[in-house]
Length: 189
Ligand code: URA
Image (tube, rainbow, N blue to C red; front, side):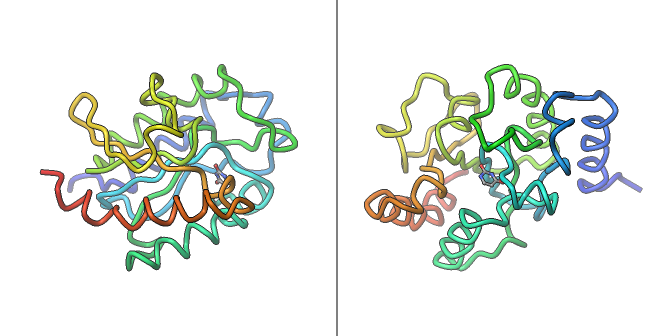
C-alpha cells in the first residue's frame, strides 16, 4: 500500500523533533506548530511563525489573523479543510519578535519537504518573510496579488493578514488580491 501524504508529513514533523531544530526557540515554545489542512490541496498558504494562540494549541493561524484568513477563505467558498497551511518557522519566537535569518534557514529544508509531499499548484506566501524565502528579490509592496512562476512553481505573494488587521486600506487590498485566487488557480496548467 502506498504511504499516504499525511503519513509522509507526520514523518517530517517527527524529523524536526529528532533533529532538534532551533533548540533555543524550542526551549521557550509550548508546541511545535507543524501545519495542518488537506495534504491533497492545490493550495498551500505559508505564514511567518506561530504567535501565542498557535503556540498554545499547536495549530497554525488560530488567532486574530487566522480569523481574518478564514473570513477571506469563505469569500472564495473555501474552508480550512480545503487548503493546507503552515509557517516557515515552526516554533513561536519569544514575544512574537521577527524570525531570525538563521531560524528561517534552519526550517527551510523541512518546509521544502512538506511542499514536495503536497505538490500544490499554487503556493501563497503571507507577508514579506514568507515571500523572501522563495522569491528574495521581490518586494511585497510591488508584487502582491501577482502570480509569479519560478522554477516551474507558481507563487502568489499576499500581504500578511496580521498586518492588515489594523490597516483598513491594506485589508481591502488583501481582500481584493484574495478574490483573484480562483481565477489564478484555474489558469495554472
Ligand atoms: N501569524 C503567522 O505568520 N502564522 C501563524 O500561524 C499565526 C500568525
